[in-house]
Length: 231
Ligand SMILES: [Mg+2]
Image (cartoon, rainbow, N blue to C red; front, top):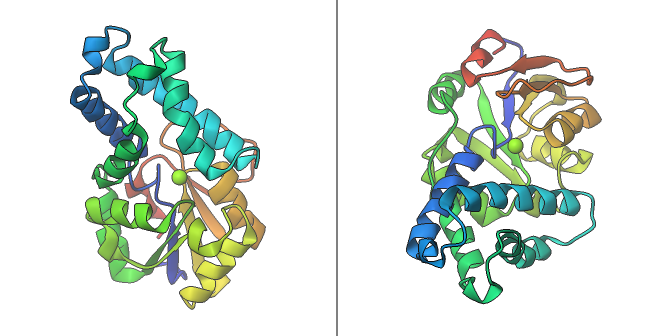
């Protein structure tokens, strides 16, 4: 047992397996829209190009160069263009269909349920996530982990994104948590770890892919069960 009382989790790429769930969704849409019949790209091409384009657009958004709506407006047209497919072959509802489908997928990272079960006995668990209220809520419910958490703070609610101090301060306030009794767990150096450092919160970097960094990291884990050595 540590001195902590409150644990703040990131959601995407930390608990909810964004890449696996996005891949499943794209495979389903590929079949639903018979993209095979276009003869232009395969399932793997669609997935690979989706991730390339998606991360490019999110980077632009995070750099405040485009608005959130632009991500949705530009994502699939850019993917189709890059795959060499005709834009008129792109189903007009593919973006809303993807956005509706993906959060209903339920894959979580290995040991996510076990570690949440273990931690929930000893600590109050909360979520700080960059995303929309309804979408993040759907992800939490679809994957069966919603009930582990007390306070859920999204960037939509906070009107600020990680790594801003404001979203962390709001989360601390809403959960009645003292900074000294709190720890942040997340995969993203730029948002989760930077944000924790900004507000002076202890932190754990979830780094399943073994990335390297020069940042001063307090705790680093490569699988979620290792949290037991810290908490
Ligand atoms: Mg994340």
